[in-house]
Image 1: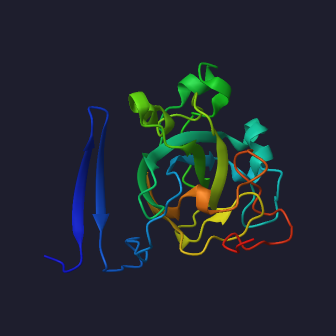
Image 2 (image 1 turned 30 degrees about the vertical axis):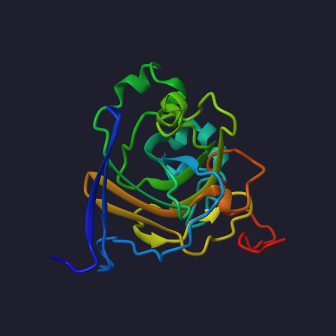
Length: 244
């Protein structure tokens, strides 16, 4: 046994099983995340989803073609960039305002349905290129709705029917062939969020992601719901933790 480590399995009705691994052993290549304990928050918990936003041909992106991160929200409308937006994970913030979400995505071998026009706008074409630019995007679905298991819809869909839906609030972009870890930023102004971490592992035909973040209600909310935010946009940085 590893002292200070634990594995949890949460069964939430018949619709969701969660596997959570926590450890104080930090391995740089494994992407195990340690976050400090925080005091319980009295604010309503938020429901969130995480999305794989992938540009399979980043060389065709027009946002920042000479930069390390070449693609932005406008490139979702550039067919030559072969963009995709795919659900990765969903959950509800805990009593401390913390969230940890994990996801894996295998490379799509035959996106034929997309080429035949079956897929809506091609955004579910999947991950088709090992040289893709990958953005991990956190989407806020507002205060969690427990009545009639409303949270199931919140954490498993892009848009839902409840008040507070929906805005893309945090992101971490990874350049082609880049993996490792970095802090998430607020999509409204590109301010990095202290205490957060996004880990991306590229393992051949498999992408693995771990997102450790805070309840969006604890961070300044964005004004623009576009997905994803342009990481090259210049602007004045604001401290999202600064009290008014």
